[in-house]
Length: 122
View 1 (tube, rainbow, N blue to C red):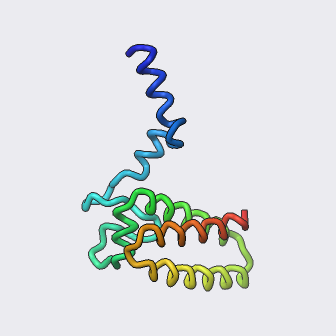
View 2: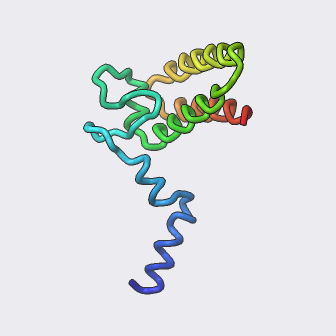
């Protein structure tokens, strides 16, 4: 492998803002060729259109994974009143997310807002 090839291979993740390991983590892994969302099983047969759209999009699946991780991190060790409040906030957000249907731009915006809200607790 020449020096130019090595430099190009190293530059790709820096240019596009991802590592090859991170890309592998969001590539399709279930039996239907869709990405794996963290908050539900993409392989189950009774998915909503919204859930199918999220499963079929590596970006939305990655956002779902991030949101779920933040949500459960936030609840870990929290007081019961705070947990109850956050469950209500999550249910309200799920209604907002589901209202997007299969609109990827709407879903991306909904996930961005929820992730930003959850990151405020870190």
